[in-house]
Image 1 (cartoon, one colour):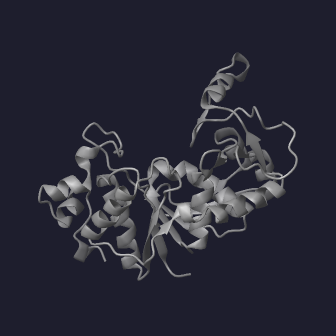
Image 2 (cartoon, helix red, strand yellow; image 1 turned 135 degrees about the vertical axis):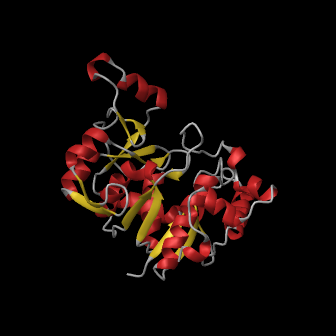
Length: 288
């Protein structure tokens, strides 16, 4: 398979130095391998996505010297594809509706009989309140849907993926790990259809992504994606989880860190080479 990677930001705010590092790292890897780099917009949350941010993302990345095939994929255009994947999992009995609010989950997880609350890649691990309620009829369209992780792992057994950077080598995905440390993750949200984990797995497969290059903060989520790939008979890419760009206090940059937005550096007269140096990347001519 040809080397294909992608950068998939959400158009909900300005790109910052951390985004620049991730996009440039992926682009440089594709250039070095003679492969292709793709831009994809994670705009499935239409309550927060804005067209002006999407335009700014493209403008900032072009300014950095990146290019990609057209058209740009948008998750908001792919809802039927996600629904088909969800229907497949529903027919296998691997999904169940969940009506719990965040407050409900927190209250249940903090109940005395539950012991200390446990946290996973998505935060507080769901205590299973809705898991054993009767499930019948067609898949609901207006409720959150969770993956029954125990049934999922029984269906696939153990799985694995190859990590190239962060703890390099083959990484096992075990039933105990997924049930105890991840839990029943949300795959569809009531207010926006598919959730992140399902959408990104389907997108990577449909776009024939061979290498997923992203931050270390998503390393623990990779096991969820590998499970979904096995359940949906999709290929598992190779993974590269790069270091994170942090501020002076060591905190990971977020979109609220507008002071480190690419657009601001541009307005101050910085050049793409300056941003490369700021995030510890070699000059463009030396990176390929």
